[in-house]
Amino acid sequence: MKLRSIRGGVNRVVAILLVLIAIMLVVVLLPAWDDLRLLSQRLSCEQAMKSAKDGLIIEYLGRFKEGSVQDAMNTLDQVMVARPNICPAGGEVYLIKNSEGIYEPLCGLHDRNARQRTRLNASRALELLREGRRKALRSSKGVEPEAVDITLNSKPLSCERVPKVQKLRRGTATTDGFEGVVAFYGLAGEGDFPAGEDAKAEAGDIFYFVYADEEHCAIWKANDGWTGDAYWQQ
Image 1: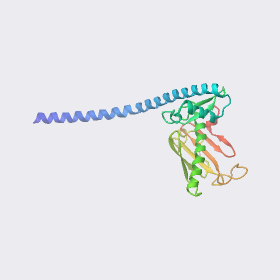
Image 2: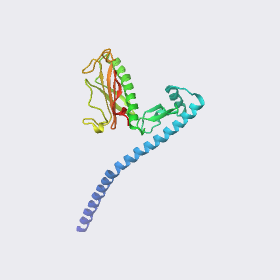
Image 3: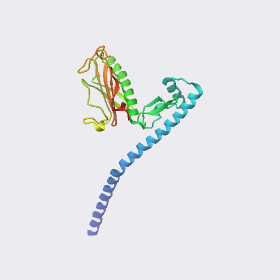
Image 4: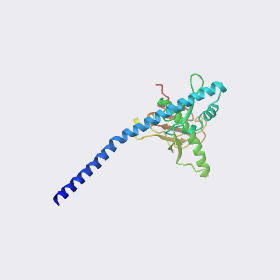
């Protein structure tokens, strides 16, 4: 009886130790696995972008010399039918002319130029905000939304309406009170934002927009264009 009791106690202790070891392994390995997954996505994206770039160059040289960005997008759709899925993590695909005048595909998540990535995503976010706001105003019969939800790089992003300029000049990682990817907008004639000829915005138009990721920030004003550290010289 005592022997059985001792064996049973030892078995329970061993089982508990095994569970604890398994938990510790998960805690230790999970971050490494996540880093490996992100690296795999980046490498796959870079390879896909290279294939898209090579295809665009071939089509560009063979079919048109002076094409618009829409022409390049249409060509990319032919070269890579599943263009929205080029990036395995769902990053936006942007086309920018390189020094040779040929459009080059860039990813909104994995482009290695962080400032350029922020600029491209900010411009796209403002475009999506305008579209989303128009839809919201139609569906609410003119009632201004408190926020407009958009999808950028396959992730939800809420653009919050604010009455004044936000304290964002750099990325959220170095700005107190903010984290991750954020976006805010203000309307002309509302709060601290001016309206009229000098403001280059009529009352009720979007006058101010700020987009920030962890690294950089891009700010747009109707009378001033784009600023923020994403536009600073490196």
